[in-house]
Length: 425
Ligand code: ATP
Ligand code: MG
Image (cartoon, rainbow, N blue to C red; front, side, top):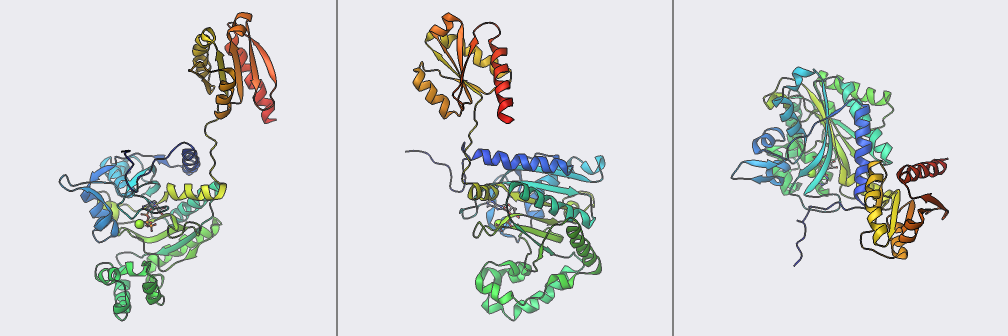
């Protein structure tokens, strides 16, 4: 019996991994342009960290966490809590009043696996800690939009404000009164939520609940003056940076720690898994985790969903590592000569490969083709004796002779460089 990977856990194999690398390279480049530094945290954390930050009455903490109950530790379901734990633990606020940090890695949630929804998935997460200025919120969203645009992924940005501890309770009451009248028509989840977390009723995916809350009051109209001013500057900032967005009064997010700005990057191309990224502001959270009283704002992009979008757009691009040079050694003496030559060329920075099975020239040429070799250097026992190897350009099929002497490494390198130059001209 073959052993398969767990349901919802996926291998990323050659052919697909190149798209992952592309996503991560573009992201790292953009994060660096926006002056973010990388941080890496462990995957296991104390369960309490997530219960305290994400919130006890959230889907993630109630039913999606992978927890070792006897040890009270949990595989992180998201990055923000761990990142803030590290920030507090290392006193990073002392080093710099504003920390701009990013991290890339796997997260774990026990959800129902489907397209774009896995149990181990990967996020690229960015956080700005220590800045309350609403322009920072706008800048972060603009950065997300820039990244997605650079990847060629089309999304819309949806924006809301969830207020703060001063104004949210008032809205909660108003909303509760609205919900009470419609209680009987809500789904079981929403009936339960309306006491623990009534705002979640607003973003229930159930069609009948959606119909019921269509006319629900908007939190945007119940913000206190400070939250309202903050929200106005966020929107003005987006306009200044040329980022289009739409307001969505139903977006409340599934994590309790958000205050004020919340946003999602939404695609129409992934069915139910519409969010490719999401985030917002969490001004009380760092203090709640035993840290200094500093504000924060951030978001995370899901790599699986981005890769799916790229695959849908480009078709699967499987430019699997083309190599510069394949050296076909024919016969025992030639193979013996080729073995250290390949190594020396790799030391010089070339992507080089050879055959180890003593195959025929025809079969080695096939191998070279499959590996996407740009050039093949043919060295047979005869060639070795005559002191001449043949370099074949696999695109033009032209051939040149190279002397087999102590300069062969330099000569090969030089020839390849020369041809590479004419390639790019
Ligand atoms: P969703 O509404 O799709 O469940 P979420 O609100 O739970 O998403 P967040 O916790 O905000 O997601 O995580 C940010 C991003 O991480 C999401 O926008 C999505 O791209 C990605 N993501 C979240 N959960 C998963 C998952 N189970 N599989 C793949 N990607 C995910
Ligand atoms: Mg979710």
